[in-house]
Length: 432
Image 1 (tube, rainbow, N blue to C red):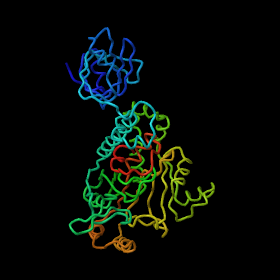
Image 2: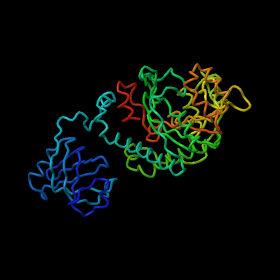
Image 3: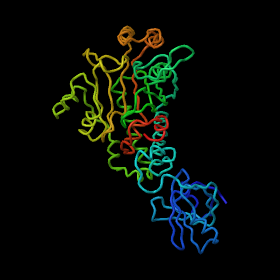
Image 4: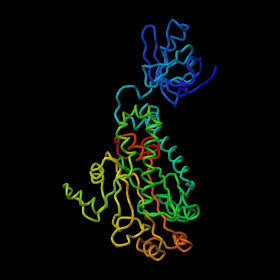
């Protein structure tokens, strides 16, 4: 008898198999017990017919409690009534681990209760679907960049220098020296790009500020490509191709998860249509002011309501180009004809999910960068290696960062669940 996973049922129709699973739910009549089974790969139904099994097996099935772990033996059958398409006719059950008074029952629970039991909530079908989409985005990320000849590089998590200043960084004592949890691997990726041409990193980043909205997390994961011999417009093309690839991969490979989340596939399909719209920062401010936003002036950064309105003016992700220099990072390339803006872009997701990508062309003039480092009160010694990149064979280069959790939130269609969690690490791992 072969042991299989639920997801492989289609390959074993008519065979008697063994499956390790948990009882997600159960109902029974006088002569039939219906077991909702999950094993981490999928959910399907186990049918226990009283007349077809020993009495002790049927009574055991009727008494199983939610989240009890079991070995199930039975024959795989096609089931046209279910979206999964298969079920198992149960002939044997062995209890592995009992579960009593499981706190998350099939009834409605409040968000606060579920968040306080997030270690168990992860077992639910909705959270399971979210994590399947997250996993697919990760898989597709590697496929996209490997197919386009990028090299994966892992920058350090503990850093002596910072990408955008120290005001929102976690500081730690590193053998009597100051060090910070990384807020971006970008500066290191610039060094890697000048060695390998096209590189990307994928790792955790941190912000030392309380998470109070669905758009801001203390810990999150970033995908950060960096590309040598590339200007900003070429980088924008890579960005939109990458995002469209992610969307298509979710559509192709997360069918059941999208069903569980009730995500509209036709809406997602629009996000694969290229190119994405582009609008300058100047035009975005003008658009907002024309539509009654009196709380925005040129030079201000956009808040969530502003980004949502701008995004809703288009039917796909939109690039906002060339922000004011004063509100952007020191390393961005200055505009060739204007002193007040830099060559950069944010990609804003539709449906109110905000910025999912930030990127720019990098400044390559040594003296300009040194001046910016001084203007931002950064330690010149800590950035001497970064300036070396401009001393020894510098080239035009561009890059960007995509936030994984916010992208998952957008593609899965998740609504905000609660304000800041006292356990941000676990929260970020489980809930985008």
